[in-house]
Each structure stands twice: as structure tokens, then as C-alpha cells.
Amino acid sequence: MRSGLLGGTFDPPHIAHLLAGEVAYRQLGLDRVIFIPAGSPWQKAERRVSSAHHRWEMSRLAVDGVDYFEADDREVHRDGWTYTADTLDTFDPNEELVLILGADAARGLPTWERSADVMARARVAVVPRPGVEKDEVDKQVGVERWLDMPALPVSGTLIRQRTASGMGVRFLVTEGVYQYLDKQNLYRG
Image (cartoon, rainbow, N blue to C red; front, side, top):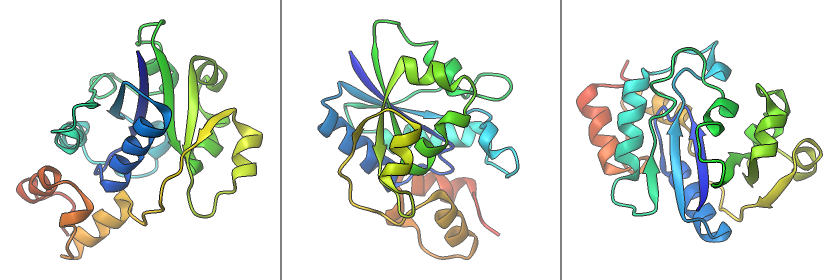
């Protein structure tokens, strides 16, 4: 089994996350793409993040209906900071794992907890991001493949800001996530 792992805060999961999963699935010949919302993301320690429960529910709703996408809650229920190295240790050692990272995250991979273990356990596929040079990432990380994905100027920050301002976000997230945001009154004011 060859699995792509797409982790993140997913506050909220949006169309750029889904497109990255789709592109990785097709270009890397993956069997599945697993979306893993971080429980307590150490890299966001300085920022307020929605509860793990909300981010898990939105992740589950975001991938609903796509046979080769899965939402995985293994980090959501973990106590303390969640680290990718610990998460990778929970997978079957015979499973081939590919981390799907934005170029900005990949550039910072050497600063991650047990980064050498992460790079030894999983291959790395990178989504280009504006302002991050390929050479800069390639010097830091052994990239298996740069994914050919169109740039989408969508981020969780943008969605949270637009929602707080009463602006539309309906087609920046899946319909299930949109309905959840509305019902839970997330990110408003």
C-alpha cells in the first residue's frame, strides 16, 4: 500500500488542500490520500487554533464522497503537541508513506521534531508555493517529486478573515464544510 499523507491544521480544510491531494494521488500513483488534522500543532503555538474536534469534523466532511481520500483522527486524540515523527511511527512499517507538503512547510522540515526520522520513514512530495524557490527546498530536503499543481490563492487565513467580515466562502470549501462553518458559527466576528 502506497499512502500519501496530507497533514495540517485544517482550520478549515479548503479546496487547495483537496486539489493537492488529488494531484498527488494521480501524479504519484498512490492507493489513497490520508488527511490528518493536527491535534495540538506545535508550529501554531503562537496562534489561536479552532478546537481539534471542529477541525476533525471539517476534515471528515471535506473528503466525504471521494473513495481514495480518508480523514484520519490519530493526531486529534493524542495528548500534548503532535509531531509528524510520532504519527509516522503509528503506521505499519511495510506501508510506503509519502508526505505531501507545501513548499513553505517542506522548506522548514529540517526544523521539525526528529526530522531525520521523518525523512527516513517517508518520501516527500512538494506542492509549489509562491515566494518559495525550488532550489531552496531541494537543498534542505530530499524531494521525491515536485507536484504539477496550479496555484490557488486560498488559505485558511483567507477563509477565516472573509468569514469574520461576512464575505462569501462557499466555493472555497466543500459544501459539507461550508454548512458546518455556518451551523457552528465558526470564524464569525
